Image (tube, rainbow, N blue to C red; front, side):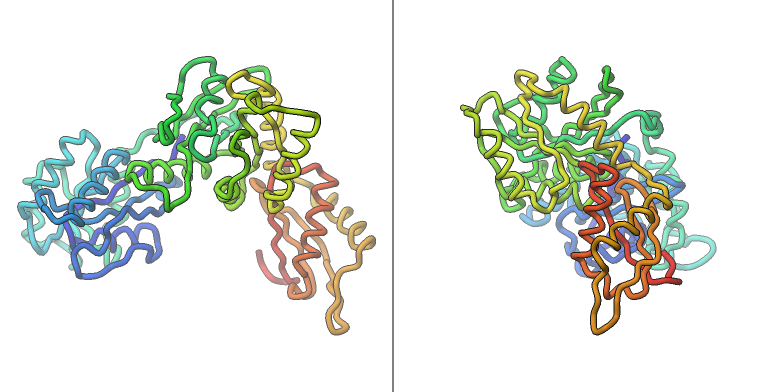
Amino acid sequence: MSTPIVAIVGRPNVGKSTLFNKLIGERLSIVDDTPGVTRDRIYGECEWNNRKIRIIDTGGIEPYSDDVILKQMRRQAELAIDTADVTVLVTDVRDGVVATDEEVAQMLQKSGKPVVLCVNKCDQIGEPPAQFYEFYNLGLGEPIQVSSVHGTGTGDLLEEVCKFLPPEDEAELDEDVISVAVIGKPNVGKSSLINYITGENRCIVSDIAGTTRDSIDTIVENEFGKFNFIDTAGMRRKARVYDNIEKYSIIRARMAIDRCDVCVIMIDAEVGYTEQDSKVAGMALEAGKGCIIAVNKWDAIDKDTHTMGDFRKTLDREFAFMSYTPYIFISAKTGQRVNNLFELITTVANNNAMRIRTGMLNDLLNVATTRVQPPTDKGKRLKIYYCTQASTKPPTFVFFCNNKELFHFSYQRYLENRIRESFGLEGTPIRIIVRERGEKY
């Protein structure tokens, strides 16, 4: 169910970053004639044949270099190869096959992953140059001639890559399955929650932060419905991420957010709220996902009659930017209120996918604008002609007016609150687009 990953590798200065930029359609990776400009892994996304593909640009591989930077670049590339579904080996037709190409090709063959051989810088239209046929000697199958500068041959390259991608999971097409990403800092109990829900040790649980490295999918079916729970790696502050593998795990966690319907943001009740909790929640908000804040380890807290109320006040204050998000206090260890979590997930998923008829929206708009008049500026008053829902996940509403500069943020927030109150959109963000009459959306 995850987006397939394709790693672009090769020796320095063969045009990997240029090809990467061409595939994703933007200049994300720095391009320069100096070898070693790309040092870390850079990520982007492209779409081919109605299928999204995650592309990784890597630094040039020098297999036997003792230079510290080049060794780190090689390590980064190896990590990308290990995690990728398909690897694209980029070579330079002008240089022909060099010893480094052969060494990198051998390294890729040992990885056991599918490899697509790309012969770059074939800038002339028509028959490839004579050096092109040397690349058959690498033993990686039929090479694809590409010009990353002009973009020729990139379609053939993506066609070949798609042949090796894992088949799309049928569960992805099942609309009854609710995908739930369990996200949060390290050691808040994400894997413990998955294990309790499944009734087995599906995920490794340890007090050592960073135990979960990959995003693990688990299908659960019970009386509440059918769910796909995604256990993710803990996301800590960027300055505290030292391990290369952990950097890659965080990318996987972000991808899990992209493909889920609901994010369960877990907080450690013993530690309390931290700034990193709001940053993790911000990722889910930015992606437009339905959200639930689950306060875990509630069984380990010494409680009195005010404990939960005080904790809620803290969450209300710190998560004011997500005031629509419901809270639930659970224990992954004892199962306290976990059944209530399923009901909440179903509600939030339905709200995130809710579609409201245009007639009902405009009835609401008439009442709201009568109760609180639209703002004015220098004698000009905002007139809102009508409203319609453009899309779901998250619910997105388009308001057509006479002058969008008069449509102040505070009045947008007022209308958003009226929509929430009327249709009960708990747990889901709402996006508002303002257009002037006659302007397309």
